[in-house]
Length: 370
Ligand SMILES: *Cc1c(COP(=O)(O)O)cnc(C)c1O
Image: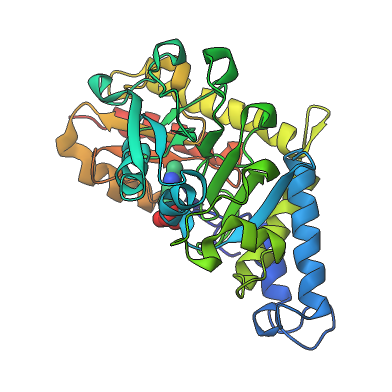
């Protein structure tokens, strides 16, 4: 008997569904009888074009993306998009941002190199354990866009409803960095102008960035914007202006197919996954809240379903915790170095059984306390 595969709680690059990895392994040297592996194919050949078109159609279906939005498969990751967004949307003028943790703070600093960036609100006073109420955001009248990170991967803070900028009297498009919860829940596109996410949390390998942008926002890139990062150019060429990250797109496509097969309580696809993610998060937070040995400091209304930071009351036991969890087949639980402690990332690929195994371990480890 082979040992069961450990559960991997990495924040990213993160676990990929085993079915996807096994299919990719089986197709590694010969994709569908073509005599080529996917990495060896021309991106302009009919084989890869079919992989690309299927992936695009599947993600459009999974996220119910309306037809007036373009789906772009880019490179550069979330951090690349921190520059690419202002280069395309700011016109060198004013953009607004709400800072709710490390990732939006990074976006703020990077955008300031290309435009006047205005801080509309910040959660810093709460040490990023909650989100300032949208009704209190101070949005510039002339903002070209408003940037929000809808799931702060490090601080574990998630928007469970997108802000309605129109209701706040703001006509600017909302830009969301949804890198770490893309495809974990549905998206209300009526509130969104542009969404971007790196693939390595919930989609596939690092190196691919999924951008979904409303068509009317195209056509305003600053002249210094690199052609490969100009959304209009990327859209015109169907993400093939430059060579796209072909293998990443292929794995993303297998993940989309896997997602479409998921069923839960009469639901399918992202809706099924969302129910499962709610159940996973509830199991873990309920346990953490019931224990005095562990704690999670985030406001219950904004706790992330994907990234659960937690702290041992006795931090001197952190190393022992990490060694014991690894030995128990629970990998990569160490928290981000900027805030310490632990973090369990429970993306789509983490089954409920993995979260149950973690909770069982947490309970067991607590009993060993001195
Ligand atoms: C991981 C992450 C990023 C950065 O992705 P890179 O691929 O390293 O550029 C950006 N934003 C959020 C919210 C993330 O979780």
